[in-house]
Image (cartoon, rainbow, N blue to C red; front, side):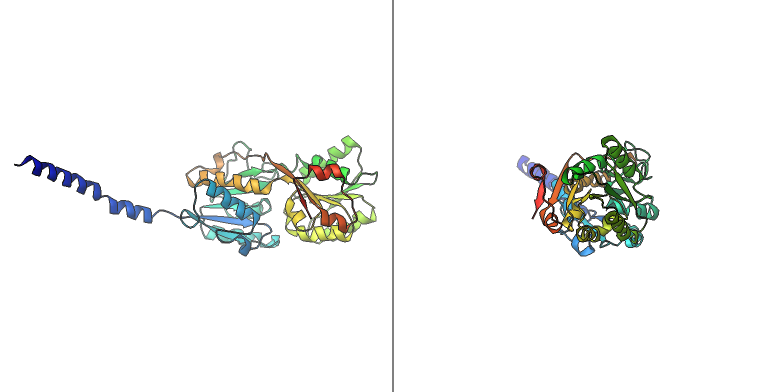
Length: 336
């Protein structure tokens, strides 16, 4: 047989062998799983969190982080957002909705974790910030959570003393510094505040609140006691009511310090705490690992490395407070 003919047949045969699998590869690509990522926010509306360009800070940060890891919205994943619009009573129903959808993973704000813990023990949950996950019962230890919840521990207890120091710089004096806290969720932070007060000789006024109805009564108690300033400890009771708390602080002309910039964005005076956008970007790394097969039980909680001081000059003007220049120069952001 002609050698050229044989070579051509060999070539055509090898070409056919190379071509045959292509339709299977194409079908496999078309059938690639599109992951569904649930997002549960304690304050945003669902519409603010929807789509590939959400207005919500938590959702925007998460999608930013996923883009950095090579994920394309709509091609590799979609989101199933649920926002409570500042209504903590909605957390259980929203958590149940996400569980019923059988999403692949849920990204959740810290205040929503109790509802999610009751709703599921199997769907992986990555939190953008738990105050003290071990004390709160979400993890056996930071190094080895042991359950279905992992993510970021935002050190709200550890930074309580720093917030009191900043508040004392803002409003120096001998009068008491009031502390608004929830005995069901802020015990560790209140104890840290007490320790800081004793060490520095500051008089503290304890304002306990067990439900939303106690918030206004707490402000009245602070003004009746002539407290010079207020520290609001973060948590599921207060965070969803950031706008209302900021408005009460302005109405009562009471300088107030918060752990999250969301309070300042809602009209509050000053916040010092973990950078929430950076936290959202970091959460994407956890989501990526879980989608690739990692178990949340074995993914250590991380602590934030970036903190931010945010000051609202409009809020300061509303209560007639002059911000000391050294503090203004140290601020990471000054809102006008």
